[in-house]
Image (cartoon, rainbow, N blue to C red; front, side, top):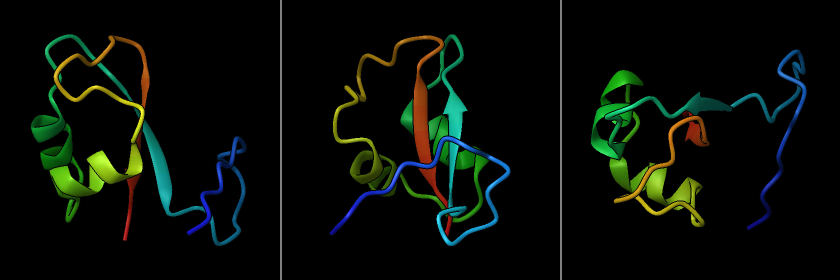
Length: 67
């Protein structure tokens, strides 16, 4: 499967189904998933293969796959 990263948030194309969450102090994948309707922790892990879910860096970007 291909992964497309779109840097322009004004893009109205088919890749607008991913948003980026900036990690805040104390954020966990569980907490982040709960903020976005219908997003599971498993989907977050799948969308962020290079992110250590037990050590989120404050200020880093986490991809949120929206269905």
